[in-house]
Image (cartoon, rainbow over all chains, first blue to last red; front, top):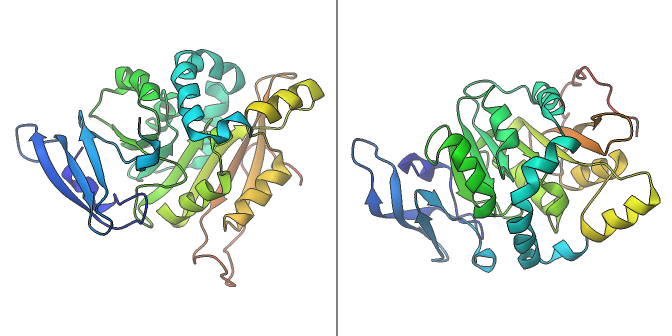
Length: 63
Length: 229
């Protein structure tokens, strides 16, 4: 995912902003984030970024 | 709406269904019908568009003929696998996993929203439509394609058992309940006797619900006639 996604993405549960923690990023300027975690600034729920794709499913819908 | 009301069941169903979906789907809703709906959608190249229930990417592919970039959302990773082979994982299609009824996007994030072949699986369609209204800017377009309620009783029984089907009147009820004021409904059919699709094109009102302001000017109709209600 691109870092600019943070402009429009939010917690699916309470719609508050998400904080990004990057574990892995592609090389180069504005490199895609391939692994990391998005954390709700309000409820603290975490959403993983796996293989570059943010998994924003509410916790009750995850595998 | 029946067995799929349980979201866990829905996910299991998708995992198997996605394998055959692109084979089945064109018989119900083909390229020609999709392209007609894209005309009604009328997106500009630089519009930010969300495709909800993008799945294997049949509609996404058509959307890319009109816009530079598509935000795709689906609840099932299995559905996306085929889309990855078509578009790559990181290109013009941005993939997100999420729930249509609890969208992970801020208010007014998108210019337009498209959802085809997905509404019939949602446990609470009105909740999803409310979310659509929330994430699309006022004046923006929401287009939803679903299956029209079958006329034959034997198919009605099947329809009621496995998924949601609705006619123009029910579509109008759902969209109104979700806070839309301007809607048009079109019936699309591949050929006489084939299953019918119902396509709703709705405009997000200028103000959030309970607005008593004028919803805006009348919309011109597409090349097909809107259905009577």
